[in-house]
Length: 288
Image (tube, rainbow, N blue to C red):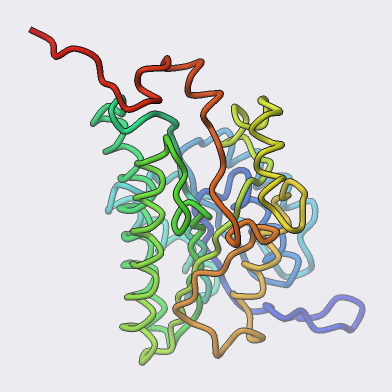
């Protein structure tokens, strides 16, 4: 197998990676950088059309002797996660890297958050990451070790008013990562998470459309700029490779220093969406 481009060894040559949420955003950016470093990459997500397009684009950039695969997967469904892990293992006969990037969010006051929304956010962000770590970790453990990287958020450690479900799911994810790292280290499996702040993706389109919110984010960042997907993907690539082989159980802030200050202010958006009473914590009269 050719493991070099222009005689320079590729650091992830001969390794296989699974990236959930790999059809767009941070997941796609991570898949691209892992591929450029020589990994054979399988991207997973719920949208077949999006995955096909992403895989086709990645194939145009693939170094020699790498490949790109895709598999539809709702990470909240255990049998689908099992199938995705199996598909990612198939090209090289084992799996080395797992990136759990599938995620979703919701903006609403606690008092106005429907239980279905709460359950949906938890299913993708927390249950989905749990299943990805469970089955990806089992495969890595059987094969001699590897690296798992989960995409968390600043919201896992700093309160974001009006994002209770998202905050709780990411805080749970970060603790899950630490427990999994503690358990799986003996098998040579490292588990870490990255905690981005505002990154310009489709998921935060509604936030990016309100300049007041963007400006508030920027005011809380010592390195004051909106993040790009590659800012996070580069850290994922680092955590996947041998340069980080003594790092595990870390929830790593990738946020321009935002974690040093307070969480973002969504109040203008939430007042427009839900009205003044709910912003002030008043649920209104009890229905009779």
